[in-house]
Image (cartoon, rainbow, N blue to C red; front, top):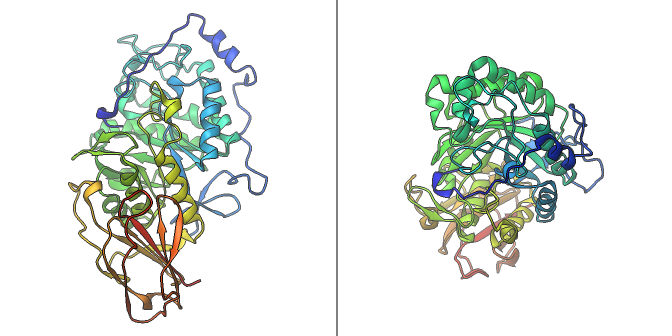
Length: 480
């Protein structure tokens, strides 16, 4: 996360740390945890583990059902939540349509968690039991001396997530706070630690991995080597678990560092600019990988360069732009729930979360995985607006994104502002039902004259303000 979004924390310490961990986890005592059960009941959720589709463009579950990633970002969970709190949080997220936790920091300390000076759990369990030479702060923890009570706590958190049908991305040693610890430990200990994590979580079917976090230092080879060494050791111990990385802040994709290309399975887009700019860059990178929105503006935060406040309208723009720019889903974020700042319980069920569920339901009703971005305007031929650049505010962009399936049975356009657009109906395989979709309340309006023949051009103009009083609409042309 950006430094502008730091929230204060209060961490309570306790003297008898192992006893506290044991009380908390009386059902999870073994060093090698039981595997997180794969979903087996129809309709209950995806069957983990996830895997990459045959064409490398999206994710599927074990039944080859396309997986639309609907992720929250509970990064600070380990430093802030009790088991009871985690149960409340995961149950709420499942009820609101989330299927992914992207991501949970394995340890929380450093700039994003300035008062958690030891990287401990709320009841004071520290992640390591010893130190390397040079100090006794968290940056000198000995990575080869993990605290069993701490990682048993993490086991329990991952299992709660699995019980609520959530995939979980774990960040093994997030780079905002823990690069110094990696440097103080060196390559051998970094490998040992990655091997430890890989072996411990290899049997959790819902676990995936994300390295980095505002990892601006990937351009320094020695730092990149240390972070990669952890990831390589995890891959060797858990070869089937998917991995990705978050690189530098403001705008980047996972494969901007070519040295990560052979280590990862997912290409994550990180941007505070209009989402389509970096998403299309990621979509076009080689080798082809599923491309998802890793981090963008969070609800209720004012960050970025230039800054933009995370209103529902800003979030909707990011959401629909990403799906029509080759995306396979996203990590939503919230000022209160990424860090679990004081008052997070009253900021769970926000307008942004409600409209994210509308977004999920909209795309789930269509073969979203077959959509191909209309990058050359072969379909949306006029009225698409100004593409802008990385300095354009999300809230000020008027650019309309469009995508069409290769079979020509579906075309979708997202318009952030109201005006007339022109589309090439010949891009569709047959006559198409045309409807306006309101992304603020999930309702459709049939367009007069629909269905339209698949020949020539046709002009469409949205019906005015949407339910929220904004000008953004989705045009759906269904020729199925």
